[in-house]
Amino acid sequence: MPAFAFALCIGNACAAGDAFKDPLDVPAPVTRLTTNTQLSAVTQAGSRLVAVGIRGLIITSDDAGETWTQRQSPVSSDLLAVHFPSASHGWTVGHDGVVLHTQDGGKTWARQFDGRQAGKQLVEHFKKLADRGDANATRLLQEMQLNYENGPEQALLDVWFEDEKNGYVCGSFGTLLSTSDGGKTWTSRIEQVDYDALLHFNAIRVSGRNVFVASERGIVFRLDHDKKRFVPSQTGYNGSFFSLAAEGDMVIAAGLRGTAYRSADAGKSWEKLDTGVISTLTSAATAGGGKVLLVSQSGNLLVSDDGGKAFKTFRVPRPTLLSGVVQASRNKAVVVGLTGVQQVTLK
Image (cartoon, rainbow, N blue to C red; front, side, top):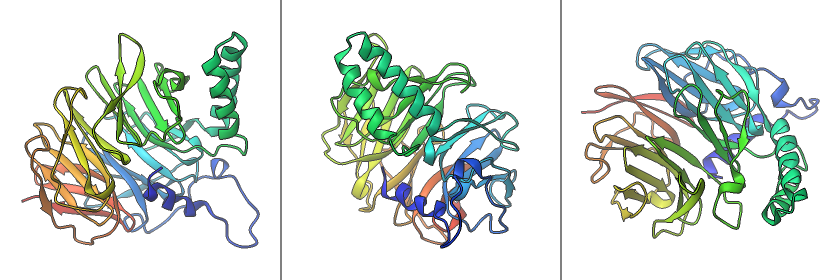
């Protein structure tokens, strides 16, 4: 799991002497500091912007990030990622394996799934397969029992939907699930990963028929539709990738120490990019026409207009640990991170 994701965990710590209340059972607290509170991700929902963060915080903007409104959230678990395949339907995921869904552009949210359900479902799923003599399922059953022996410990680190019905979530220690009914039910894809260890799946992107998952050890997994397997694509790097950007057959994987690799053929071959920075790249986004945006732990905003071949650096008003980025308008990006949300002029 990325270091910046671990940092969010402190938001659920209880004050000394307070009785513990499970964040899954406690709505997000109301705050007046909506734009200065720690945020982890931001995305577009049509013309609206939606950002999520610590203690279940969800905020929206209808003026390209000028002003923000807090929305009610049914949990106070830290939220780490958010995605909208349409202007109305969106999903956000985070710690405790939580999945929240909105049908009205982020105004109201309901819990669809969480780590309690995931633990029970996955153990039962692999037990059934193991009872049929599936040796790999026997191994995965033991892994799932270990993953959830102390409760909903596994975080969902990313979410991506192709449309309002079909989507994926991924997370720590091999967590990979999909849905074909808009999140009402979730199906394990863990056993379809061609790897003998449960790696952290830090980001997932869908572009056309391409499905990519960023992981550790320099690996980007790619869904092979014919085999119905997620096959590893070695980039030539040995470190962790924390973010992905994809457009058509172009995919960029970014991670530690400013490292980024680009593939122009849907993950078959890779080339290392010169990002010009040495800090960890935490988030990536595309904006159409080959535009790619990256942000880093050191507060860098990098923008490419040629599909990642070359990047320009833009000044962020308050340099801080950044964890999310989106292009809000033609000449403006919005970034989020440790100290909240900021607008950046792209000139």
